[in-house]
Length: 311
Image 1 (cartoon, rainbow, N blue to C red):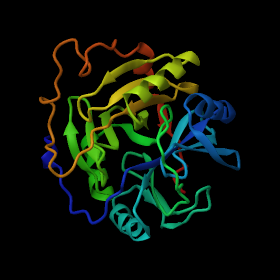
Image 2 (cartoon, rainbow, N blue to C red):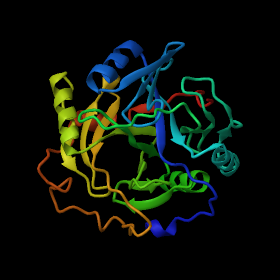
Image 3 (cartoon, one colour):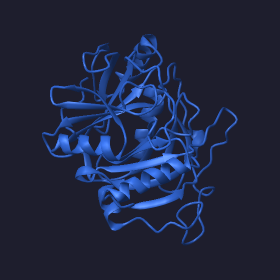
Image 4 (tube, one colour):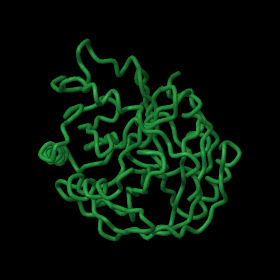
């Protein structure tokens, strides 16, 4: 299916991924990693949960919760412009979601207004606006700005993409042989990526660095701290972003990425044939080794936390 074939009659659009929430068997060990090695800044603690910001405006981009079922992805939280946008997105979502709660004021760190829901393939998602975001947003040469994208695995790529389009206002911006890239109300090429798998799981979470140099600095810091590069450093085709992939604490799949392609309405989406590499090449540069066996193993290992979809 070509990108132009996916259509919707949307009235509201999310603006990208605001944060992710994860569950860890050892939250304190994970918190030490995300602060000391991954280079985020802790901004709040609440009931055993720990919240971290990047250099961007969002109050937090990562929340770590104590695990009840081992390492898990609790939810992906999308950003909305204002309360009216949240209400319109709720109207678009409630009839299409498996479960959906009414929008309400949030009492978790950062506050805001939003709602949680479950998509037809049991992925926990949420939409939030009005959080206590930060006024300072200057780049640092070796710190993540924000969540660049979340790559989810799904048993039905087409149906998952159509849900993101109809409920949240995404568009299918590019399609490779393996992945669909979803664009929202932003200049970033994509903020959600979808690939096929037997179960709804996490492929990886990408944290945006300011540029190639920052990505390399982060990769070096990871190696110095005992976290080898599982794939990279390289440059993707769709999105044109540089990348380096790692297994974080409890083998949570992570990416440092930078120089994400910025697009506008003049961008022409492309299908799999356009993004096909010559034999033996896995990225634009063609100098990085293939994925490690470990990376291939953990790309569909992390499940969504059950019964944890309400905000």
